[in-house]
Length: 192
Image (cartoon, rainbow, N blue to C red; front, side, top):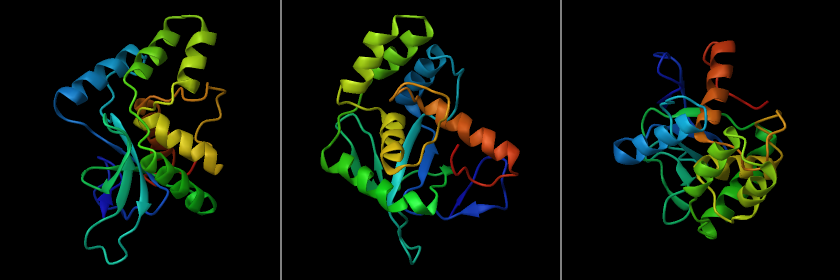
């Protein structure tokens, strides 16, 4: 079991299939992502990576199996992070969420560092048509785009603000968690 957040010392949550996790990344990679998120207008958010749960561990011995975007492509691996914040998938979308997460791992969807730049360029009013088309058609996804794409395909719409398809930096998922956590006394987020 993991804590729902840094302010929660008594509430824990055992992730289930379809849930989205948010984690901190240490080292140079985390610093680079924090800098890119700052350029995207997010400030220095402390959660830089997103993942999705595809298998449970009913006995609680080994933990769940996740799909995450990695520089070499999306992979399916055991959960190897601590301090995870969870966006809880509504039950009606769980099986489809797992289907699309597994599809991304099976296809080894490539990672996209350039999408951070494209998302940041929007903030600086670079004309939208080119950027929107690039993000939608590049066939690459950073971690937050991957889990949001899977959620949308499954019918679980995390955002209802008219954003472009794929316009989802990790900090926006963290803001979603904060918004819900602050409003609902530490319960996990279940969608817009």
